[in-house]
Image (cartoon, rainbow over all chains, first blue to last red; front, side, top):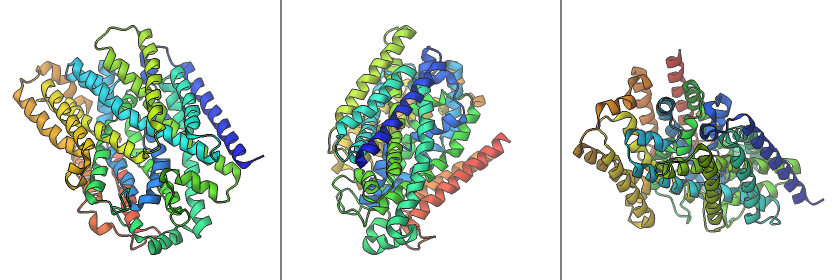
Length: 489
Length: 63
């Protein structure tokens, strides 16, 4: 039998196993909206840990990360630097949001915002911005899945088909089981990919260079520019410190603000679990190290790969590895893609129905669940359409998402900490910040010091929020009090 | 509350340490530490310190 057939078969078995776990998970959850969106608020530490970790350890980390290490060198280290910075505020914000959620029955981030700043327009705007951020992120995951399958099947299964099959499976279990499926498949896939990443991160440098130390020494002699921060830009010229630093900043701010992270806060059984998830999170960041090492291992062995995102599967296939290991590895990369993609699809649907549709039109619980499923399919289809564009880089997709998501930071912080914030101020800030971000996204050459458009957006967003709030009448003290309750701590 | 402030200050320091201009002197490949270039050791070091800071905060607060 041909090698690629065996590898593809292993992946097939793995996908079937994921599907089975995803479908099983839905059995014990109630049929309510809280059940579908918030998993009856019953997730334990193990599941929470992997649900949170999967938001980092996505296709981006597994394919985009090594792709960057391979083609842009030390530029990739920004990914290592933002994670812990980004999750640390969650130690305070997460439990606070979760307690508010339990008291007031919130299941989404926008509901928390609108609880403090009553405005249906704000709710719809947050939902739409979330969707705008989710789509490139889902696209990234789908492309990742397609890349892996195309590479291991030696082109016999093209990207469009691979992405369709992997995400067809994701769709099925998200549609049937909701968030419970996301939790349990993330846990299974998370454990799987951690093991695989470490095994290969140590094995490949030894096999190709005789060790990790000799590998870096060889790169330092041949391509020293790759090992100096901030590394290289996409065109091979040195990357700027402005772009590197602001990529860290915007990603750190954005990480805490992902709508699906908030939804997961509402799924936690208690605050203790949320805090421990944050404390354990840095371990996930350390798991990225072997993944980068794999990318570096390709530097002196693979010449000018047209699409650097393919480096990982390419390398795995070109060294003489046991076929079973290759199959397992590719399944690990797939799981990284799918475990993030499923959470995002699920979150898109929850956000669109709960925050964009329901404030304007009354719906029964049954109708809400039905509509969520419709949105899952539509969001999946849009992302799939973009995933087929060969010019998309995984990293650009991710950074675009983060620019949008970072705009949620001022309103969220204001909602829980700033007494004087008003609805008008928050809406004005969000509009101004988002438009600024969009403007610089479309006109990148106008950015000062190549600073990320999301940071430039925040530079406009914050002053507008503050000034507009101070110019409008203060909110009723009784309304504000529960949100700033010191007991929420 | 005091500890929270300390941890907050630590994370501000963390942020400054990994971006321009504080990161400048730590951005070169040399010296290698256990075979790893210093530019990579630097962010790893801060991940570990960050993890310890969070762990300390959690241990003290939860008792």
